[in-house]
Image (cartoon, rainbow, N blue to C red; front, top):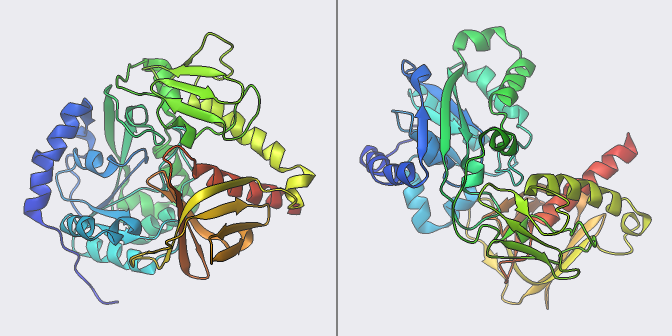
Length: 402
């Protein structure tokens, strides 16, 4: 295999550390605990739980060496952002798809005594608890046999929940530890490595908050919760919830809650759920039961349907083509349909791969090696519900086949 060198700009990384890094530390009250890793020398891998967009910058605070981060290739489609990512040594990766180019880049960096940063979950969470870890991470660690440093962030989820557009000020604790030594890796199976990764990055923000009750102060604390929570717990209507300021209200039955600085709901009525996390758990169960009904499974009615859709197509790392006319998206139990004035795409659910959400408002997936994306013209319409519904469809199909 050709040994290609990946480079970063030392001066730019240093500039980021003393400017943006300092800003993040002060802005979010970041507390670093990295004594355990003080003697670890490159090459090594850094992993951690994935909460928000600032995670790579936060992770870098307790690491002396520049880190080559594996980053979604979506960010490389923008010219100026691509230049910045090149300066910091970003490694493009297609989300939730096998990518041999990314593996070759990681091997090259390790061979040249570099430090690689990656997130085993592959995506940020919405409900402030972990999403499943990719098994391929354990295989990679087993093959490289270099030290692995774990970073566990506490408070980052409530500082900037994924559904939010604004940050809050509370505290972020970052704990660094040695998860694996080369000797550990040699003695362990891939399954054992995988389980230790899962345990190492285990983090439920609300379990942590119940013990600490840290206030996270900011403005418009409930804004954009409607990107995440789409079922009213009182009237069971879909997509009728709207956020404004600190309040979250159902337009159908006027059920209202206030999201407070501790990340919990307050209401003059029965709260139903005390946090977005418990609301989400119920929402997942309710939608599973709803979509298991005959009228949905038979394809008589769509699970979700929206108009005012912007449609894009393209390849993994090229510039996307945007269709001029707005379209419509309909999700049925067996297919996803995206249509506009002169275009009509039908995608069997079983053939969709690489499904992911970018920047909270862009739904992406691959079909026949082509990337498709849609987003809405309004900022308060959820694309997350389509990802959630497709996961539920796959779960129902899997259970019916077993």
